Image: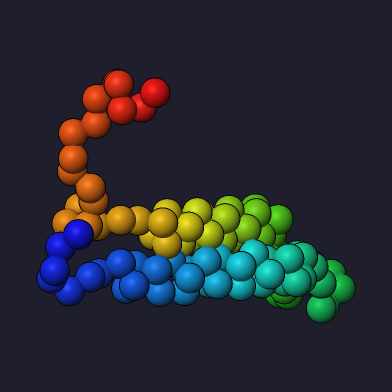
Length: 96
């Protein structure tokens, strides 16, 4: 172990924050309302219609982004900086 300041707690905190953001993004994708098309004025062209909500593609995209944030947060949480890694040589005999 190096006697310099450790960056590991910073990576752990960043990983936790990213995972929380990922869970929040997935929750937002699940509770967001699906697309709803309303035609306000009968007989008018489509330009006068109102579209609310998000398409399923957008909801799935947000959910996928949330999963990616959780994965990156997990990898960041488990990361060990190169300065803190053990560098001793390990032979096959030591593994038995």
